[in-house]
Image (cartoon, rainbow, N blue to C red; front, side, top):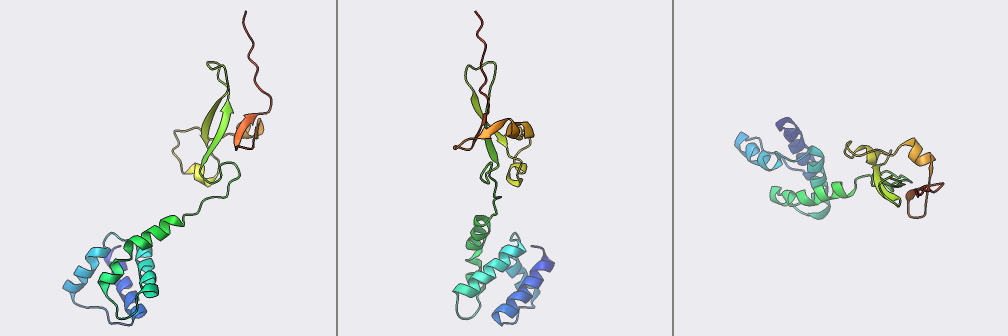
Length: 154
């Protein structure tokens, strides 16, 4: 949070908790130090938690106790896409055949949903052919519609 955002936040706290914010520069600098690396959204969530849980006069030390709880609440509520292929994790499993292996092998590919797009680009992405040429079984693995038969060499 920059100093301008912090001054707006202090005004917000003054209105929310019905107190006059400090005007002394040294005191404001001391108040700013704990909020230096806190996002404004998290700081407002801290104030919300403080209002909900703490009765009585406003105390800065009590407000700072809610930092971890405010951060935890935001990370727990991350939205996962409702994807039928990967279930929101970003990885799709597919069975492929390789000449070097006698049996099919199962590999993971990045899904085409938003969760898969956030993953590292060095991994292959699920292609249209992977989806069209295979069927999704009960275990959410794309398996070939027609099994690959290896020709035996005599």
